[in-house]
Amino acid sequence: MSPVSSSPTVVDDATAIREVPGRIIEAWSGNDADAFAEVFTEDATMILPGVFVTGREQIRAFMAGAFAGPYKGTRVTGEPVVAKFLGADAAVLVTRGGVLAPGETEPAPERAVRATWVLSKQDGRWLLTAYQNTPINAA
Image (cartoon, rainbow, N blue to C red; front, side):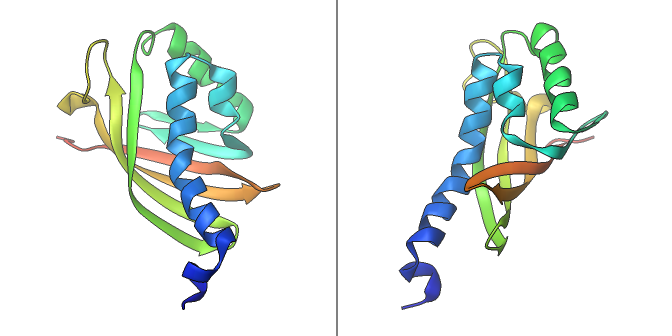
């Protein structure tokens, strides 16, 4: 038996990293900038098209403004397509998803993205330390 399949910690961590997008989806659905920011490490980086934000507090402030403005009434979706461990406390997750306008079940092509999530395990919890997304249909 390989070490990966025999270690319950690795299995639990594999499940846990795939659940991180769900924490973002839940925070977004409530337009909760505090819960959204809590998924990130204190020194995290978030890169979106035209946006570069560093630190949990700046991420919280950016999302509070976004939830009150352009993202008001939207939801977000994201499904893991690749998950890789870089060590016991670091992982990379690639997702496909995007922002859902009211009534949508799939992101419109202009809002569909692929994202890279760099995760760090801190105090037993997987957190985002770097997030970056790219439009799938970039011109």
